[in-house]
Length: 431
Image (tube, rainbow, N blue to C red):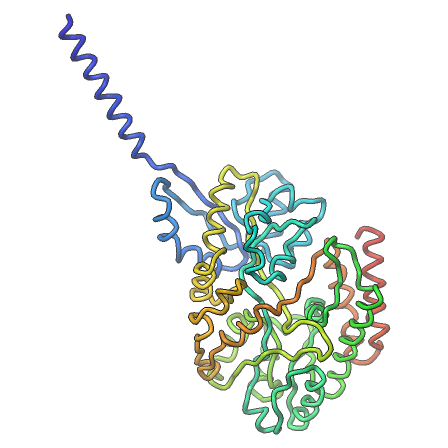
């Protein structure tokens, strides 16, 4: 009897030991999901999954990464319908104001302010401010989006002029370029481009509390300066006018490049990959880049347009590991440099931007120029500006009236005042 008990006890112990070993060896299973409008971000994530998983040997990961053309809008629709949403969202900065409405961003996403913490001054502040709501940050930016001047040196040599470094010089050089049938760059009826120019001048459209302040005396005066520059530039041939969707599709701009009617383009870092190189592959080696012109009496050293910030779903059961995933991919020098090397998104961390792996990058499309060196000098010059739920109203007001500024129907003063009036009207009526 005792012998039977002994063997029974041994069997039980062995069973428990075996169970313990199996339990200890089991991996937690986690599925991380993400939505974005741009496959490049997913390519970057995928390129580092082996490294990520090696740092988490006790977790078995699967991934549900999806490219959805209207990812931010789809996310809002899913929230409203009570449908599932992913752990991570690539939030294009132009859509951020829609998430500010009714506090959606604070209610549904992780506050990243303390995650960034004391490292905040190591990054370009202007890439944090655009994802702030009530003083807190809710997304991490993917790039610097600093603008440079992409230009064709041969056209400048033909015109006998140097690449201008100030906006006053731009108008002078523009006349000489026009004399050989070319233009310094293009302007379009897109409120974002006008805003880009205002930001560089140091004009605040909205303040840190999302209040509309364009009508304040100093902001209005500087906005009129920018509008006058645009109108004068169109009049003397400095600026080539491109309306509507022709900026993003069609042959208007590429044809103007090839025919020499458009000497260059003042655009952000991503313009090179998305729009210039693919459309004029046959012109490789005929381009160069330079720092953008600046205002001689103040403002910032560059202009910004675009950007995508990644946000973490605070209501997901995977929010903690999703946050760790995002910080692994986006924060710190090595992650910033790897992102640049793999998908050409220029670092917004100042130390990473100054790293030789970035500054020494030579691009054959630009005649083997070290383009990273130029961008690095702009990293600390990115404008700081703020969002508002009514930003789209400002953009619409500007877009609707820019053609009238271009053709001289409206004076710069009348144009700026009309944009102010229409935006304030939308705010007053809660449009």
